[in-house]
Length: 339
Image 1 (cartoon, rainbow, N blue to C red):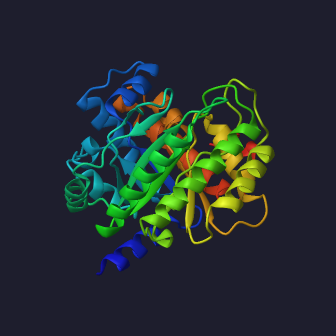
Image 2 (image 1 turned 90 degrees about the vertical axis):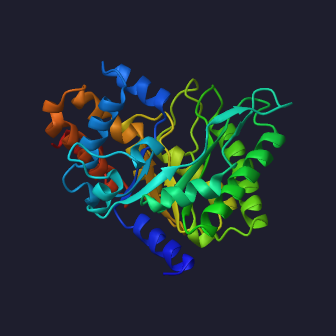
Image 3 (image 1 turned 30 degrees about the vertical axis):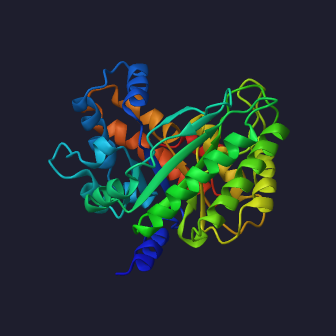
């Protein structure tokens, strides 16, 4: 199979109707924080147990098309000693991998950050591909204030995202491009829309400069929402603001947009996705790539006890199913009461 054929097949598998992507690529510090919230110490053993449970959820592949893994998990065995990528592939779920190396301050641009990880990317992708990974994810973050993000930060991060995406495609790995506009702060819906448009415009300029094939990549953006300290917008307001921006700056050639949940509750992220899919014409598949919004109920049900396996899997499957319905605008809040 040629590289072009590999990429095309992976895209088709990832953007299937009524399915989305589970983001399970939490770094060690992040998952330690999530586990602490449910009274569990994060160790190699507890992480393996939890991830084995959720990835072996019966019929998870009915609603999940791909899973983004952390490097530790890609190389881990399940509790039944099955390689995690193989466990996922058995359900028709595509394994993917987070490849950025975190973020740090952008020099001479106070308050802005830049993402690391381009060094050695080709050799790492080759290794990950040998373990079963078929797509990758790279996340940049943009803080919002009256003056942030600076143009320097937007352009620098867009350039890094495009370089990553170009390397991925050359290796036969589908790139998920994630420019996250952070929800932190008290900014208005209008300010969030302004920043989102500026960021996405520069990202697609950079992708064009680096000759990234837009038909063979996936965009993972933030929804356009007010800052978390500025009050809530309705799902319809979020959908209208988001699609208004995207119609202006996201080319129709992009096959799929998988939204991040970015601080929204599980219910909010589902309601907003549903509203997006009910907001009239859009040329892209509008789906989800949620982490905490899918996993939080499952982690609470698990609470570090293997005896809670059934309730853990049921909690994950419920959120995956509801988001699968929202993917085509068929969700309603009454469904939250269903078992």
